[in-house]
Image (cartoon, rainbow, N blue to C red; front, side):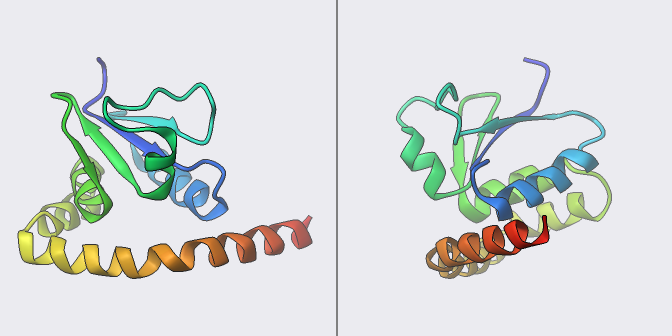
Length: 126
């Protein structure tokens, strides 16, 4: 394994693709492996199916631990350069993780609507 963390993301979501493209661009140390779970050939961690991974953001550490939602973002951020590294360490502090998780859970029901809007905007911009 040449990476520190596997990042599972929904490549069929235009919002997710933009966000992940940004993270990929700044991942200059190449510590992250990117897995688009919208692809049928994507390999899921043990105990997870493709639908589980499409519903929420997940990461898997080298030792096989899987984290999702705010906890997953916090771990990923610690491996990114600059301010992201510090944001990740702050986000890993339990009270902050809990607040971020509440915000993430509030966002999830809005995600389908936001995806439709993003697709419509992108379709109209072509």
